[in-house]
Length: 47
Length: 540
Image 1: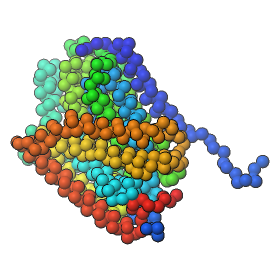
Image 2 (image 1 turned 60 degrees about the vertical axis):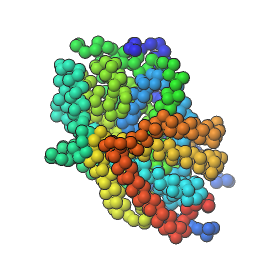
Image 3 (image 1 turned 30 degrees about the vertical axis):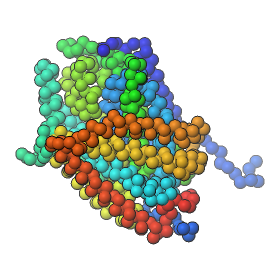
Image 4 (image 1 turned 180 degrees about the vertical axis):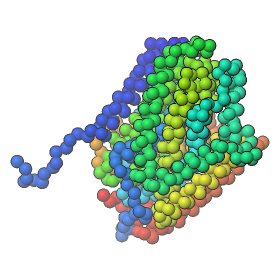
């Protein structure tokens, strides 16, 4: 029953934790630092 | 019908910020199950291999139903509705959805009946650890330690007899419960932005930091002299080494779907209420995904690395396996033995139970709000009156569960029927309403209003076909494997059956009250000229 962490165990653990961390980081980056949007000018205005 | 106007039947509240609503939803989702139920479930169901059905359920069930619920809530809010009955009435285009939606108010209220008690246990354990621990002698034989933790838990919960906490003097846990309940009521009364959002904005980062500190400590543990001799690698191996044979067992898939489902709080009646306070141009797609991702961080990263690992290192596999049988067992019976063995164990014990308390209070705060909102819009009462009613309703339920504490039958009965079975029903209603009655294309177009990211096109197929089918299989499996045991208890003989039946009577009275409010509310909204059957497009 008891075995030290195997290579497959490492793989599943790192993939699971890594994917969750990447997703969380990506989401919060998009929420906290949204891409800057240029204000839309009415037709006929602007350079 | 066409001359109906769209006005709000109650004063409208608003979220303070986008981050605030995300943290509030994530706070509602992150609870004891993330730290205690997930690792136990994973260890019992194939370890690392469990993550295959787990992530499939996340992508095919949890996230799409969550997106649907966010979109449904915001759309309902634009029509001036904030309660699940009214919003589901709109999406299902009639009274069937409205009355099924009563479950969307019953679930958070019913779960609140017992959840605040569990929350107060966590706080009580914090105080105990700050005051020197719960009386476990680390040098004693394992059997003696087990006896101490089980005895302490039974004393705190009153599991030995009904009324045990109130007869022969009032047990101190009752005062802890009153403080916890008062805090809940106060924050809910302060409203969405000043109450719930503020608490979550502080509690979630504190929880994450405390969790990471404990994680760092757990991952650097040396096998303590005189204990099991097992290492951190053994603990991680116990949880993460994959056993692929388990994937052939249907129960593994059921456990994974159940874990995702209940962990994300979809179908709980909270997201639909919270999202109803958002504006048309507020994003729900990225917000929903971020709330889910945050919940997963607490579950997989912190829950998946801390509890089982520490337990295996300090008390061994046998005792850890006893603890994985249930949320309560691992948290309140096994881990206290770990803290008794651990250097500075009282400090880590207090920190751990503080995390559980914060996880619990950010969840319980979300449980009163849907009922409060529903009372306001149905009866046309203000915040003071609705808070007063919901406070007494909640306290009545708390008192019922507190008194009927023997073997925790009342708690377990409500948890199974309201906190588990009805959630599946509400989620099924939601995904069918979104994908089939309202229409998946129209629903996705609604979700994309103001969205800062698009839902990938494959999810059109997932929402319309895969999620309802997957959910149907989960419900069928649940009925085959889980329901019979509870029905046997309910219709059996003996004291447990009597307590279960009494609990059901209490639940039926609660349901009757909510249905009555819904009936009165529908009449009132109709008189106000509101579009309760979803015949008109929503306003901006």
